[in-house]
Amino acid sequence: MTAIVINHIALFVAEADSEALHTDLVTTLDPTRTATKLWPYPEAFNWPLSPALTPDQIDGVGGLTQPLPGTATG
Image (tube, rainbow, N blue to C red; front, side, top):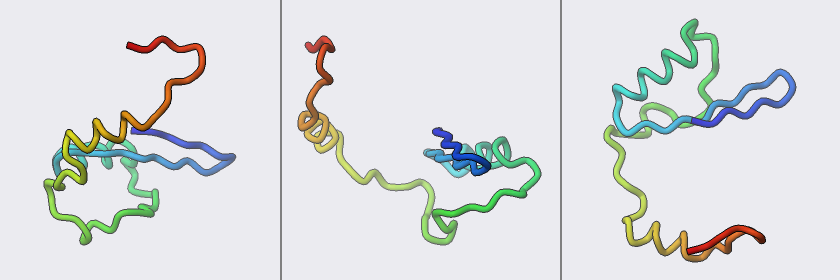
């Protein structure tokens, strides 16, 4: 989960790998149910979500990035 706060706006980005975990996150983040969900629409997804990338594809994307200057590699 990541929170982004800009002045009086708080945006929470959360990922869940099951509907039960998603429900727990929503209940924890918004127990009063006063927040507005911007995305995604619940009807747009079926749980559990299918992986968008395979582990090999994820490794390939990671190999495209460059280390920050001054950081150790290897």
